[in-house]
Amino acid sequence: MSDRGHSEAPGIARQMQIGLIGAGNMARALARGWGRPVLCADPVAERARALAAETGGEALARNADVAARAELVVLCHKPAQLEEVSIEIAPHADAVASILAGVTLQELRAVYPERPVYRFMPSLPVEVRQGAVVAAADGPQKPAVDRAVHELFAELGALVTLEESLLDVATGLMSCAPAYVALIAEAQVDAGVRRGIPAAQGAELVTQTLAGTAELLRRRDFDTLAVRREVASPGGVTARGLDALERGGVRAAFSAALDAVLGDRRR
Ligand SMILES: NC(=O)c1ccc[n+]([C@@H]2O[C@H](COP(=O)([O-])OP(=O)(O)OC[C@H]3O[C@@H](n4cnc5c(N)ncnc54)[C@H](OP(=O)(O)O)[C@@H]3O)[C@@H](O)[C@H]2O)c1
Image (cartoon, rainbow, N blue to C red; front, side, top):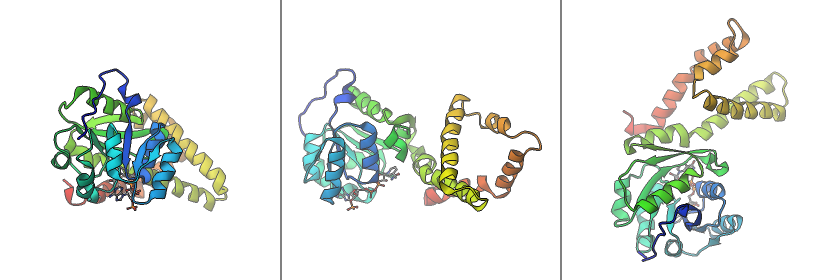
């Protein structure tokens, strides 16, 4: 580990040098959301170069070089690469934040001992700072660094702290959900196309309605029934549409999707 110190100054997150290990989909979404120069490395050098160029940062040849220069290393590789990456970078990393699905704080501490480690679960909309990010609850480590790292992830949208035992469930709700929502949007547009609406206009209508409904739910403190009652007048067309969705098994489908995500960890 380097002996680089962390300032106690407020707003430290703004200056914190971020190093991304892996420059794939989620690294790109995080970097775009943070909107500041990042250091990064990836087995595909061109991928790292493109991400560095987009953020005004720097692509480095080795993971170890990123860790040596970053104040916070963010693990954006696949969970299966935890051990091989840690062998390269543990001697250099000051503080480590992981977004690796299913990798526990205990497993992280085993390979990154004696420094602050953090476990976060992001979702793809962090790219537009509208993501949900879950932080695994943990005791204090280095208070100034703890604060800075949480501030950093809070920039990306809503940061929600949960007991670590619930992180896999949360992953099934929010990390997978952009794909679910995209599927729902596609299904709705296709239904419209079947009845004559051009796909482009259908997509505009459906996407804007998703975004606006999310904002309405937020303003109504997530009172989903209130929103449904405002739209569905007794005996009206929306009530009939909702009934068809219920009979189509929409709730059961989401419940089954979460079970499928959790697999053996299902309770
Ligand atoms: N995608 C999501 O929505 C999402 C949400 C929450 C959490 N996550 C977590 O985010 C992590 C990345 O997921 P992703 O979807 O971004 O995957 P991805 O697009 O495949 O990105 C992973 C990147 O890491 C690179 N990599 C492989 N071995 C490496 C090594 N030894 N050192 C450095 N980089 C290495 C990969 O290169 P190669 O392709 O050449 O192997 C790839 O560019 C995963 O751990 C996942 O659990 C993802």
